Amino acid sequence: MSHLLGLSMDLPLLISAINEHGAEAHGRTEIVSYDLAGQRHCYTFLDMNRRSKQLANALTARGMALGKRVATLAWNTHRHMEVFYGATGMGCPIHTVNPRLTSEHLEYVINEGAAEVLFLDADLVPRVIELAGKLPHVRHFVVLEPRGTLPDGGPLALESYEDWLAAEPAEFAWPEFNERSASTICFTSGTTGLPKGVVYSHRATVLQTMTFTSMGWLPPTRRGRPVLLAVAPMFHSNAWNFPFGALYAGVPLVLPGRNLSPENLQRVIVQEGVTCAAMVPSILTNIIEHVQSKGLDLGRLESVVTSGAGAAPRLIAWLHDNGIATTHTWGMTECMFGTSGALLNCHADLPLEDRMPYLLKDGRQTALTRIRIVDDEGNVLPRDGKARGHLRVKGQWAAKGYLNQPENCTLDGDGWLITGDIATIDPDGYLKIVDRDKDLIKSGGEWISSSDLEKIAASHPDVVQAAVIAANHPKWQERPLLIVRLREGAVLDARAILDLIGSQVAKWWVPDDVVQIAEFPLSATGKVRKMDLREAYADHYNQRASA
Image (cartoon, rainbow, N blue to C red; front, side, top):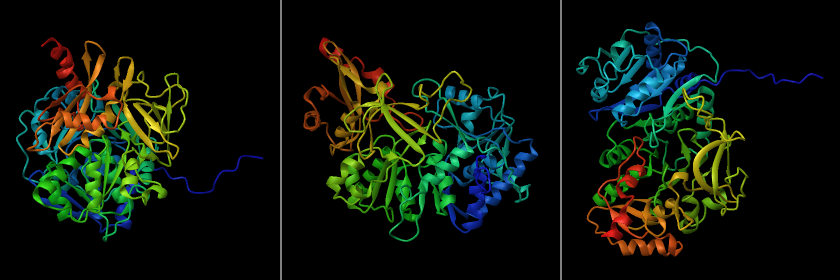
């Protein structure tokens, strides 16, 4: 007997389907955007759909077709979102470029992506002028600005995005093509060498969007209609898929533009009635500090999605006291979101004190991803919350390689993504990142987790940000050194901070010293550049011993 196949329609999973769904089913739902000058712009999903089709026509008129690439060097705005949908819809992969990269990395990334059209915000034109004559693939430099406001491009022949659209009709038939075709290309932050390109497919993006908009990701609002705020940048893992998830779910979306100051974000959250926001914990910390110092509030905000370093317990408690839930997830450029921060029902209803340990973890695997930990030999370790091992991930949107680097495989011998993280997984499936492989500290032959120490230090009321590095030591080879940024007006009390750490970990884990700095060096994606801290403070203990 022959193998029986299903009789459902077989349609490719393409981003253009999300665009059409948004226009047809939620056409009047709004997208609010703030430009470089802070001016508010508001239009609908249907408006965005029509303008994305005008862009597709403009690209077609200039010889762009399936497989040819475009790049964006821009902030979170409605025009940037139109490029996301217009280019991918016609089969042109979008290669996002991080404006915070160094000039060397900026040149490398643009050339590595081989885009023929570069869309950029006006304030970033000077960054590209620096690279004039060094970008051989780029044929068009298109500025995402209103008509008649083209900046001076110097040696660059700048073109107007709005002029492009004005000349084109708002009808375009999205083509069908292989759902495994590239949709977007995002580069790693380059904290350990040159950035590496991660290529997402249409299939992976659509499946990730479907997961993102499930109940565990997008909780129902208690106070009327939900409104999403995408603070996570579109050049960083597609703004955590918020631009796609909003249209898929029919939820209003707010794009804050360039200004991510706590003053501006608090104002936007209140003014736009935001109910759910996505941002890294450092930005969340700054917003809360601003709100507390000025006696303000966060309006209708009900939930915050964070990723990367976890939020400090005191911040989670403050948010809880103000009716705001926190959802912490784990992800990386190579995997976008690998976990969902939604708690199990048996934990979600616990008092905050009992719920806190789960909120401080890094989520549970999603329906379409699997996680596990292995030892140095690749043997799978138990999910007992105690065993620590190398985190591995397998799933529909996990990367298996890098752009133009066939020799640089991201998978282990069993076909699982190597994440570079050390983690535990408890019996309920909660993941806890213990540290990065490269950030573990080996003192006197014993391993110490810098991540655990950082979380405890950050719980001190005077500490805004904390990082722990391995510093060379004349006796123990390495010892942990705590580096902190304090809240405004606070005076460093190293003994109190170290006593707090000592109350929660073994004595030999406690750092030998605390260093206060005004600002942390950050990567292009807002992560602490520990390599810079190591370079600056690697000999702190040796110097102290010889003084």
